[in-house]
Image (tube, rainbow, N blue to C red; front, side, top):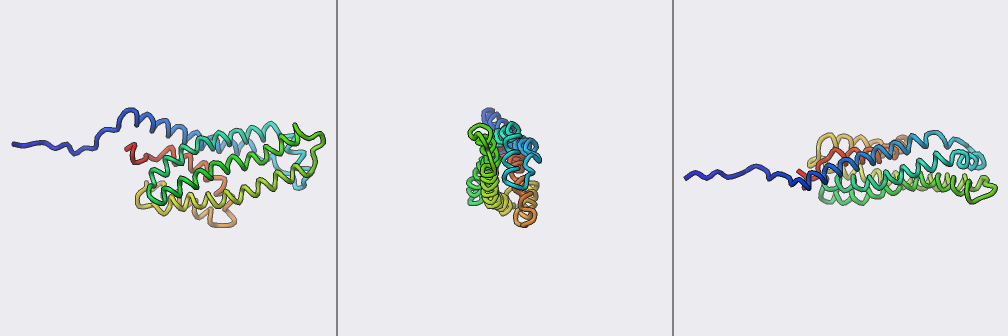
Length: 211
């Protein structure tokens, strides 16, 4: 008697497919919001002295606070992307992706928030804002930027070393980000690109349990 043995992969439950679709959408939104925050902030911070920077923070307060708000929403959405990418990478590298990715998201919000805080303090809390508020905002932003370099590099390096078990496009893009992040003259470019890269990766990958 011949017995057919079912060897195909069991279908993914509808609920899992729905959650996967939601995860893709939220991750993609994180990438879009991160890019939007960058566009809104643009070249609004151009002064080269404390007094000029303090004045710019007050004059451009609306746009700067909007950029920071977009960055906050981007950070929240990127947390979903972090989960999706870490579950795709798996293993010890996946754990690094989880920790470093969350730090990338938080520091994104803090970077824009440093300027927004200077704007709010100068516009709403001080009657005569001066050089100190502008200088303090710039110092805070640069301090956060150094942290972004570190965790961004850890994130893309962890993804890159898992190249044997992740999609080729993901490993290639991670290697490109590693080169940018490891090169001093382009590390700032990597810090700008990595949040959007993370959101895009989260939108495109398929975690193991969703396959």
